[in-house]
Image 1: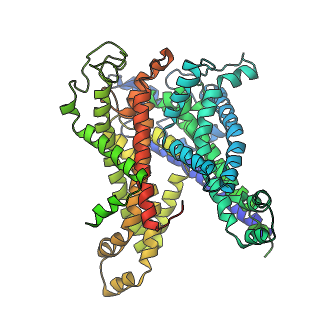
Image 2: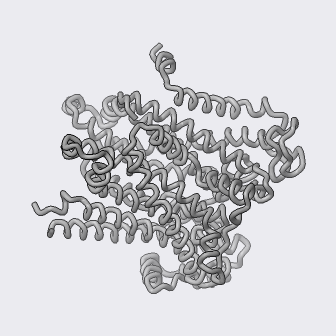
Length: 318
Length: 275
């Protein structure tokens, strides 16, 4: 048990260090850009005094390490500074958009996780059957398709040909939960399709891998039914890789959301990030990038911890 | 001819893949010869339907869509190949070096790559693009640098296995230089897995450029490019005009084709019959 705790603590420590280094990288990346941020924002024609005043406002006159720690400190306090393009506090811009992004990602996870695990097990159970081939064909093509292709096909089918859902998924506070869900069905479905392909393939592979073990052979020789073997013996042992895959795909969801949000003009963090990159609103890019990175690292960390916990060999005392 | 024999024995899926790639390259190379229009010529009304003049109709500015698609193949595929090549040179060089030298070089490179890979690629690229000048060289630099981390992982793993073999040890004892060992001993033995990886990396890079262009942060108009073409024509879909589906389908088709060939390659390399 003690070993397990050390293992997990080690992994958590690693995650924290990674996050720290990433924040440093984000900071340096912006700091080390050619030219001065103030000049590049104000343009070539700006008066030297204006540039100087602006530098003061951005605190560019202070040494970098002090700026880094002030940035990190205020970030931890929830003060993310002001947007360059409209001067509004970044926390106000990001807060509700981040909630929207999480809402969309969770909705997609809610559809895709149980469905893909179930289909993955079925594919492993009826291995090399027509059903299995069909699934592996679809997943292979879904992996090769760009997200926006899937998104526009869904729009063409379910918003234009059969007008069931809106082409633009605009949600706001006045909407009821039901209305919101109706609005995000198409983006949610797009995201689900993209991650389901990976999850199904990995679940299938994990279960098939376990099916090759001697204890499965034993169960077969005892005359146990195929379904019983897969669900009672193979799946629990395949759980560790499956959980890992699920968590990794959730991490992917949070990032894959960027493109889907742009397609459906969904008011989320990804859309904000893309707009800010185009506008070169660097403080907003920094803040939203750091949030995306933190969520991604956190989910990856969770994936590792869960797979440590669900691995019986690591859990057992030595 | 062993290569010709290999093609003769290729499964149907690989043949389809080869055919699609050949058509793409053919159209891309001969775009100026085949098409009656130029890349940016406005030759019709906005979003015209398909006709004898415009086989796939026109785009949001009235340019011939098929012509734009052909030029798009040219630009997008060429840039993707260049990026993949650069990322392979950087990635495999660093990977071989880490494996051949070991010690602190390996440690330093591997930790750096671990950190970059713990960060979502798209977000990393967006952040870099927000501070770099908006140009094709910066696009190439950003994607090649990020992609090189994946190549590094694979080539290091492959080279690690080779670096402990007797013939490398013999070369070391002979006093060969590190460059000689990397070029003469490691590279030839690491080539087969790296070739298959090249296909996969190409797919990734190709999809990645398309995604960035789709977001408006990749290849800039008026240069024809499949990702930006989807973006430019996206509005048409609400009117029931399926113009943006063409470039999107072209991206998907080419990626599937490359994947089919990679699968075939991996199958040959591993000698597996099943799956």
